[in-house]
Image (cartoon, rainbow, N blue to C red):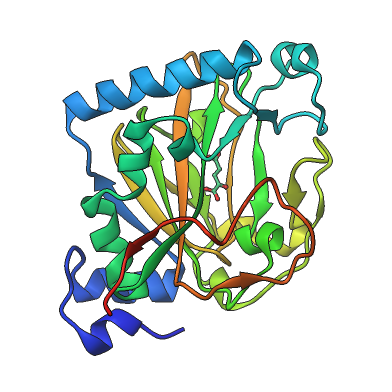
Amino acid sequence: MQNVATATQGLRALNPEQVDAFWADGYLKVGKILTDDEIECYRAEYDRIFAEARAGKVNFRNLAIDNTDDLDAKNKAGKQLLQIMQMCEQSILFRRLVGDDRILDVIEDLLGPNIQLFHDQGLWKPAYTGGPVHWHQDNAYWRCSPPNLVSAWLTLDDVTRENGAMQFIPGTHLQTVGHGKASTSNALLDSGDQADTSRAVVVDLPAGGITIHHCQTLHMTEPNTTPNQRRAIAIHYMVPGTRSLRTGDYLGVSFGRPLLRARI
Ligand SMILES: O=C(O)CCC(=O)C(=O)O
């Protein structure tokens, strides 16, 4: 993996040690980037969109159970991991978030000056019932080439291991591993015993904080066993020209989403 940005230009948001840490570990804790007022606005909008989804007005999946379109089954399942693809198409606020300079400056330090949105997803783990995300590399879902996408994961609630903070295994972005269907839900993949969980690092964050991860870094989040909900959005960025080796539609993901930064 090479650090494209530092070779060619000055850094905007990260220092050289952070850039090197990202390329060595495949993830980086950046910390809080939103103000308290912004967090309140984003929470209200997030809650509005998920309430509309639960009422059947916005498409969503409950990744904690097998893929189904049955609204009642999705809403009433004992485990809940609700996913809305493209929050940025539901709301001008989330459209602004995916292009927020505080995030893009970090992404530019890692990917260079040409940045395209791949897609985003709201991932909500309600209190007590929030389901797990098993160990996986994002690119096992996407099969993108070149495999060099970078994601910003932003939480709107304080997160610890117990309510679904991100956990990473450092250095795993350097090698692709195989995945199978998860035992809990056929909507999720699981890299099984290829994840050396003894090396896992839990990244606690305050509300309004972000972590960044590479599309091959093994990561997971545990079930939410706490009285506190966990509202998060993952925003996936790529260099223009990235393509997928998949055939057919994948959850409406498109390579025609906005070019967010370009140096012509
Ligand atoms: O939000 C979660 O629980 C998992 C997020 C994730 O796997 C990702 O952003 O790639």
